[in-house]
Image (cartoon, rainbow, N blue to C red; front, side, top):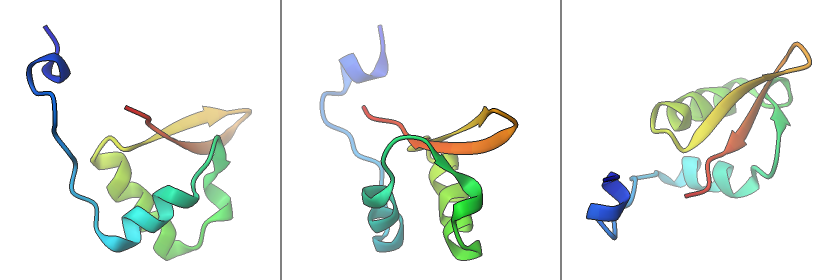
Length: 67
């Protein structure tokens, strides 16, 4: 049984910067297009399992994890 089946309503805390960056992230996006501060925020989102880092054509791409 999955945790999502046991707990119907749970949320992951996101601060304002994380939330605004996540709203702007659609589809696969190259990690090189972000500024340094945004890369730090994306690393935090990856640790929280909200964003995934993917290797695609020898480039590092990021995408949202939709629950």
